[in-house]
Amino acid sequence: MKFPVFRISLIATASMLPISLILLIIFLVIYSWPAIEYNQFHFLWTNDWNLGNLYGNPVEVDGHQVMPGAKYGIWFLVVGTLASSVLAMLMAMPIAIGAAYFLSEGIRKSWSGPLSLFVDLLAAVPSVVYGLWGYALLVPLFGKTIFPFLANTFSFIPFINGSPGSGYGLLTSAFVLAVMIIPLISATLRESIQMIEPALKEAGLSLGLNRLEVFWHIILPKLKKVLIGVGILALGRALGETMAVLMVSGNALNYLPGNIYAPISTMAAFIASQLDSALQDPTNMAVEALSEIALVLLLITVLVNISARFILWMEKVR
Image (cartoon, rainbow, N blue to C red):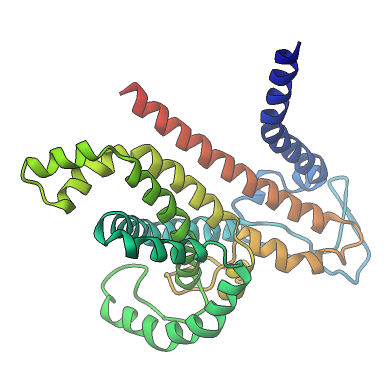
């Protein structure tokens, strides 16, 4: 009699997370449905976010009450979110892999423990602290020194040339996101490297490979699934980051970045920055449109995770 109760309790506990995700999606769909009906699919690929005249009288458009001149297009948010997250991953992955290798194989164990603890503590720093660090230090440094140097030195490379801007923008946001996700990737990889059988490493060394070659040809291929899994977790963190990006992105409105220095805005940061203004809309359409942005962001995250699962499944098939 005890076994079925225990089994049922385990099933119920394990089902809480997927059920919570499904309920969250259902809630967002129901709450934002008026905005979905009003905006339709061009909501995703138009750059025309405008709350309209909040002091005017509501007008009826296609059976929905909206403020005069209200339009909701978020293509600039989709581009800003994906560009900053992907760029952050490109910067974070090599550094995190190198840090994991250094902490697990490159130094003595007596030094590895304290340094690993320091790296792990970076993951516990609140995002608003990273945002303040970016605002107070990185924005002036990048805007006055780093970005002009990059723009002049690599003027022949598209998206790196052009105006270096003021320091707020895509590259600054991506850099802050990269610093935030490096500890997450590094800690997971470090533990996985330490769990690999010593016999494999010794076999590589006995064949004449140096330690770096052993890591590249033997250890990394064994960590392929771990890399994909932790990469998806880190990408999810970058996609959903709010305060840090809000403080260094420049909060561009209806603007697509022409280079990596240009100001941007991401979905999560835009929801936080626009909510107060949206609450002034007596028709509630603005808040429902923000909920539609949240739904799009959630679906992007789910699609990223499904893609990762598909990649892992393809690896098993091969």
